[in-house]
Image (cartoon, rainbow, N blue to C red; front, side, top):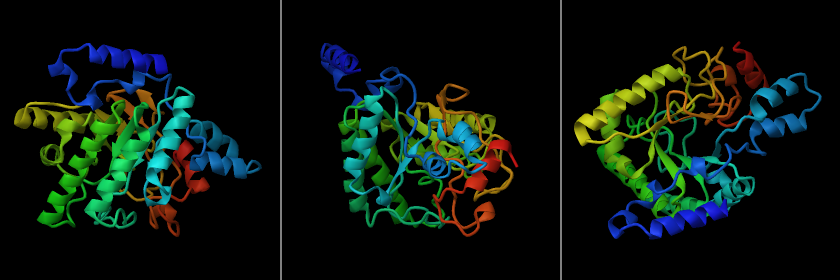
Length: 321
């Protein structure tokens, strides 16, 4: 892979100056620099299976969940963030695989939902954190989903806080462009049931979507791939009509096999969807929210905390009941 990177650098250096100074994040395709998606060896499903080999659910969870490539989420729990992202993408790079990371630490995170509330202590603290996040990735290939729900979750923010959030996201995109040229960054755009396509297109543009590779849909939700594809295409139609450009998008298919029943927090009867892959109606279908990890103290996860692995929920999600 290092030979491919050196060849890419040499090719870029030979370009006319006007092209060579284009935003570096758009200069490389990380999917062609790797041999498939990375399976997190420390995912919640992997760790549970290793700790419970005699459990009757372990075989199904191991086969259907633990060995499917899915995203790793990074936030305040990750310790020194540059070290954490660097170690993760370094491990993936060693195996010539493409890692998928979620940056989830924005100031005033989950202000309305509350179950995942928290995030950085200030806008400036976030700027420092995300710069270190990008620096840890550096030149290695990666996919990053930037701040799930941050543009859809405006209802509890005042106009000043909204402008501040837009600035944080735009600043984050600039850092990835500057420090992580082989990373595709997707700015999160919520899901089809949250805000209209026209409203989301405006929010994406105001937050700096032009600097991103694309946008992401359905993170931690259940809408079908076809519903998300229709919504993503509608967002792109609005972007084209208003601002003169479109962007590729990805869909979280980890829990959308049965579609949505209208609930968003640990909904009962849901099922895993299409495993991580390129194409499939979007640029990529990705398992972003790990199946079996709780959304919080709600629904079939009553009594749990956000991110806690619930083996019975995971097991039932494999079969859709």
